[in-house]
Length: 392
Image 1 (cartoon, helix red, strand yellow):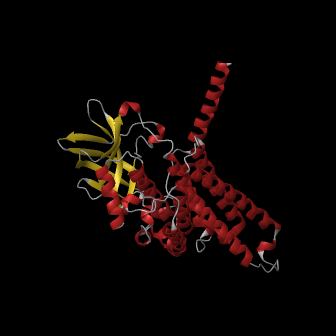
Image 2: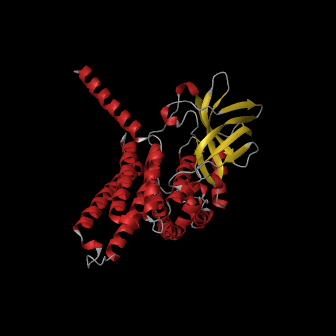
Image 3: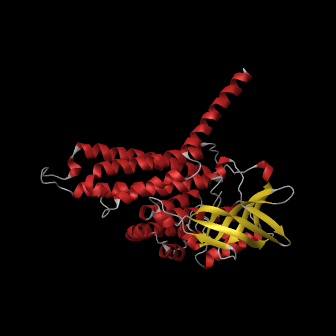
């Protein structure tokens, strides 16, 4: 459980809101060019926001999940691509300094670099052949022991933020007689690691979620996190998953909020000659914007509830993955309603609404996908029923 926010933390979160507005002015250019928003991360570092969730004893602000949600949401309102990379960084920085799974020397390494400059951190887990580890298949990336080093070979896709990642947490299986599975802290400038620019999605274009190829990349033997027998499969900490299942949907909720704001301003300022009054006077717009308000209000309550449960140490079980499912679907639905009301101006690329919708669609890609979430929840419900029937 983290400390309550102090004055410095509150001021830093206020700065996140200011930066979100600044990032909005550059978002269209980054979307059009696919250029990585380096300047945004320099600004986040200068504001102390890259250390928001790092433990205080490691020079961070010690923020909890609710603080992280506030910062990510503010940034996402301006530029969701920046916010997604930022969310992943906050998640991994929190894990490094709080989970107890990281060796002390690696905690010191990544938190010190985070204090000194822009040193982003993200996981590299998804592969071309096996997809996401959420499906239960072991990775094909292999770590081979060579004296005091590991030699790592494989390919990872969707390595979000790769232009500014200082390290990638590469999920791999060892080639030992009894194989182990875990993460290997790989510097992105290590010999044998190369980036292949493959990211060309319809939205979230500036995340640069490209491929990395590793060919006998050498790292010290002790630079590993949470190695365990591969026979046990992928292990997930249910409580720590709240960070991923909270921060990722917050990115797309931020895009939906930006879409709502554009639509309200457009409808209030647009006065067609045939109407003689603003579009905001029409019942159709009242109803449509009201639908968006309902969807975003539900999202706000879901995200806040999950964050408070985590920060206060309350149990939440499967609710975390339900939050991810519901918030992303609501965000996509909200931007679609906005597009319908926006008409031709809404799909004009001179306006940001169509970009907000494209960015919201990016939420579909994050594992576990919604069909898998629903399938697992349904199976669990039937299993509970069977167990209850057997006990009678």
